[in-house]
Length: 288
Image (cartoon, rainbow, N blue to C red; front, side):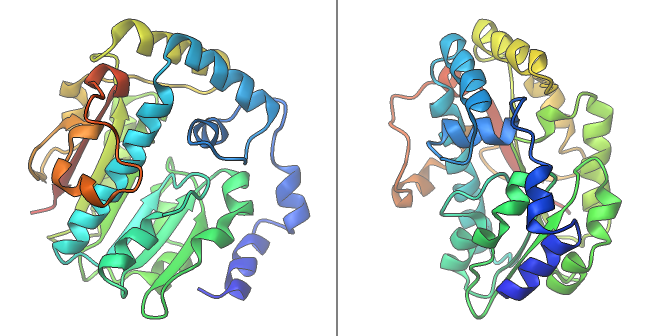
């Protein structure tokens, strides 16, 4: 997608100035907190203060979010090597290079990626997601995961992805912000319904099973800040993959998924990282 097309996408939601006015600086936001944990600069004092409160009760949160990023890259690379060429990345977050399309296109330059997020901060930085190879394509949708139909109906999706061919739906560190499990399952089903056999689902999800005390305190901080965070056990996380074929090694803590892919990650986690320090489950599955 060209820069002109990116501006047109933002223009659907008003001028860049009006988008900036939508950005709340008086309450913490999960995407900006995530950016702070990753060492980014696109966050405000209120986000840093909330993030530091998280770090006091869960000191390895930076390790946890890096584990999620590393999982995303491993999963993207593994699926690209399996021949998948299209991605729908929901809950993209503030761009952090290498972004998903950079990982996919390093394996297959023709890969196509549509990013979607409902945060005006992400929209304001969406140009960073438009650096596609000439052979491939990227697009950005300002949309909410709670309305899959609206995302799927956008021209960006229609013009970028071919639903007669397999598509990867990636929702990394996202569905724990959907309070009801039934709603999270419905979201997954809605995105996968129009996709053909061979399509894939990539998910990671926060849990309290691996560090009950620390994770529960993190949940309380997010909830008090106005962001609903729902920690789920492995058994509930597994239901999000109902009807799909899990790829090996199945459901595991995020840093343990396909360790054989880690040697090409510049920020690979140390081998000493424990499951409790990460406290995220992750898995990849294919639609039969």
